Image (cartoon, rainbow, N blue to C red; front, side):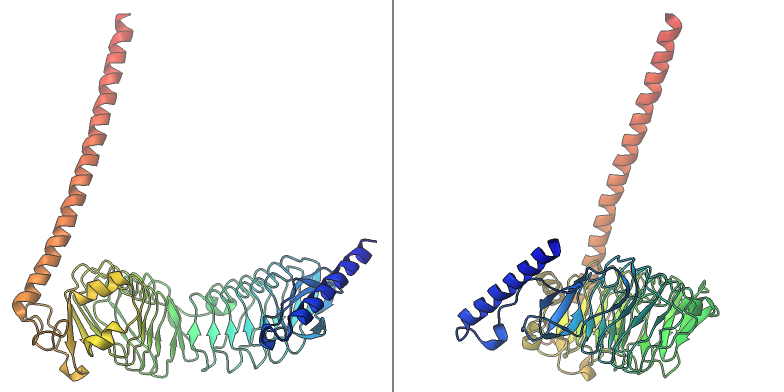
Length: 461
């Protein structure tokens, strides 16, 4: 009886949607057809896509076992398995995804711990975050040649997964994508991959079999395994084109690194808290420096962004306490929020270009104000003065487009002012700490006095 009621309701809703579409025909463009709410077809719920031309599976209501996702819904071809569609369904054992599906959404099969096999079609391009998270019985996932993107945690802790061949043409492998797949013994990263997220293959059989030291996967530098020795300098093979995000995060013994000419991206948190990294040269191939890339590199004193760099992520150089000099290229289009927060000694910002081109860079007001207060404009890379953080100051270019440039006196004054600001801040903290210690000592004295008085009273009673 309830099934009849649900079917009648679905038919009624469909009719209403069709009437609504017919009533508005000619008033709105065909690309803006009314999108109906969730509808039902057999064991599946679905929605129409925004353009109304395809359907997205939103839920499965069947008994489980072997499940074949329909290739059409509501007369429209199915283009995606939506977010949470099979979320935590423990009764499903095998799933076949039809041709025409180009995306599997976030959490689509998350927690389907009874599923042993998933058949993915040619034409599929994207697997979303957490899509097969904790599918602990999944033994095989054949990724089609059309695949481009695997989201973060997509196959996290699929402990029975033994095979996951990543095809040529893949571009992105998200952080922790295969982490925890203990049975995954073989891993490949094709040359087409441009981004490998943090810890993408940690806690796999493959990673466990790697020797300590620098670990490579094809042309990808994955990370340093084990305890890094003191004063370590990394020298990557020239054919390296990708470095996994966070590969050197918290490597406090890293002092230097050679970056090959094929590197195009300094990934997220790549050198996070590398406290002893004092110098680095970015190759001309780099176009992006991601968020937190150099966060907390306390000994980094100078950085020159090559002409190729277009984007600087948020907090990219935050807390670089001794950073005094930055060279920014004319091709820079965006600087993320708080990119230089905590760079208390930054006194020399050189921009290769005009004030007008600098003003076109997207950035938050706080960062713009900080940079403009210390900036010199030069017309080309050849005009950038050699780094000298001791006492020479700037010799070429102009500040804010005015004059011929600052001399050593003003640069030294700014460094002195920065040092004074740091010393002032340190004094404030010392005062706070002294007050705190005094308060604790006072409380201890009161406690002792109270204890002695109490003891004296008990003896006199």
